[in-house]
Length: 135
Image (cartoon, rainbow, N blue to C red; front, side):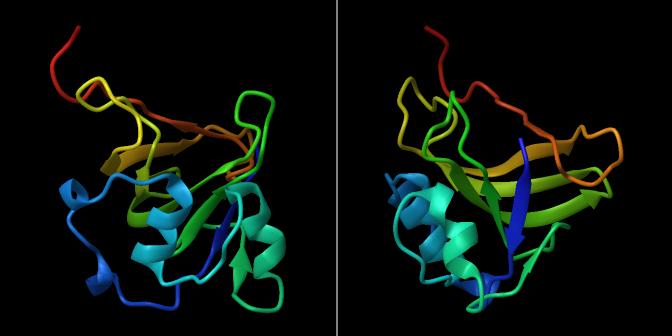
């Protein structure tokens, strides 16, 4: 899966408390990044052309755009919150992990690893963690 990054135009001070949100990934990413793009996550990369900086390397405040796949047909977006290393970042996103047994929750500091052979972020793995009580 190919991942791309859109530069955010808003400061990180726009972040809102995760517990106040019960969102899908797109409205959450739009709100925390300030990138005013609408539509499914899989359309963000194309819609950003000529409007926002696009690149292949993660930057804090950028939106990570996940290309649609068979198992994720409308894509996914999350905002890069920290660069841990050249092959690991943390993102803030919504509607990925089960939190207290429910989807549609926001998650801060989710680990994303570059697992591409060339270290070019063309393949990544999002580390899913179990949040809340086990059932």
